[in-house]
Image (cartoon, rainbow, N blue to C red; front, side, top):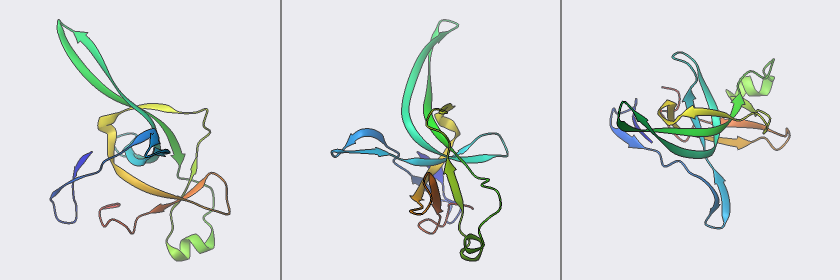
Length: 133
């Protein structure tokens, strides 16, 4: 995934993976996507694929991803989250995946599981100055 850095305006690349056997272990990366023109969301990639469709006699290829969405609003923020400026998201039910166009992916994201709360994750934004610029 290519994007323009908001820190130095250079082109950067994120290599996103969704593979059940990446070096012998499953790997399903997370990403920040555009849900609408003004709304973003975090997702975990499940599968990325291409569809070739014949339109007006020409073959056109469209790329899609099957993703598990993460909810941003978990109700009232915990005090410690506010003090530490943490962003917490929760995984939607595994039975609720959605299809998105690959072009809606803004960039890769790192989500770290909260050991105290199942299916909740912290957004790790300190690894990359671009995350919320």
